Length: 118
Image (cartoon, rainbow, N blue to C red):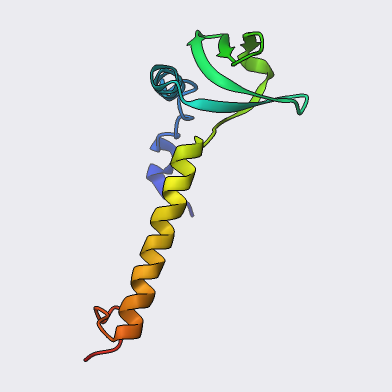
């Protein structure tokens, strides 16, 4: 027999359709002039930076090519594109970290994080 209070349970409401996070993210991309790759519903990918946006479209500014006004309902994804300097800095930092770890392991001066106690 079901509990008598079961009929009084509140039904969960669906999540809100609009959280405002899209506008905050697009504002960030626009203000910082972050390069993005925009994949459209037809599979075409265009890149540039978002100069302007509103509730229905974005303006993608491209170097050496015409600017594009793209309706949001035609966008599949927007992906940040790593800048050349950022990518090489990340790669160099990762190599430096790996090199330091190898040097510490070879000299026996590790911090004991690998489970060895000295």
